[in-house]
Length: 251
Image (cartoon, rainbow, N blue to C red; front, top):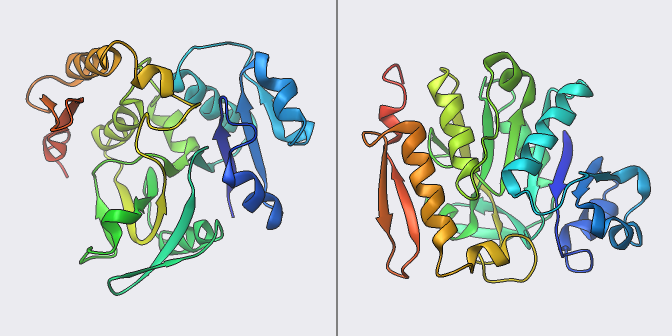
């Protein structure tokens, strides 16, 4: 299985992933902020911790450190997982069966003969109704496998967005003629964005979502109105509708 990278903030005692990773003796790194390093060191071996040397720079900043770390250490592909993933699943027809983090290895097998810049797992609440084994060129977040070597070759980076950086990252791969794919045979579950303490909780709940709105406008600035359309969801959250097929007309 590819190495696992996890950015974590304020969840040293809450991440369900630590138990699963240790149970199966997987190769991983936790990327944490300096003021929390000693707290994480109480439960995670020092050799598994990366101090990012900066505080409150945002998730895109940490994601870029991970990408650079992979390239500096000649790691061609790695798993990037959010620290609040609660469970993993595999699909049998329309039934989701609870499993373990080892499904990541099965997803690698599913895509082993494909040249995807990113492949990912589906959200559990969507996977059960899927009619195909994958969805190509759409959103990829929370539980993804990144081709770091290809990103370096194409000059793809995590740009400084407070939110939507995962979406922008995937869009860059598509723009550079690299497909991305989301497996519907395997899935994960996690809390709703901004609903649990730690991570990006403060950002999601900052002044009625102003940072989310700013992120949508930044995304619009990067890609233009033909590809990005600002929308407001039923719960009042600012979001962006992406016209994926327009990113690269060669798709």
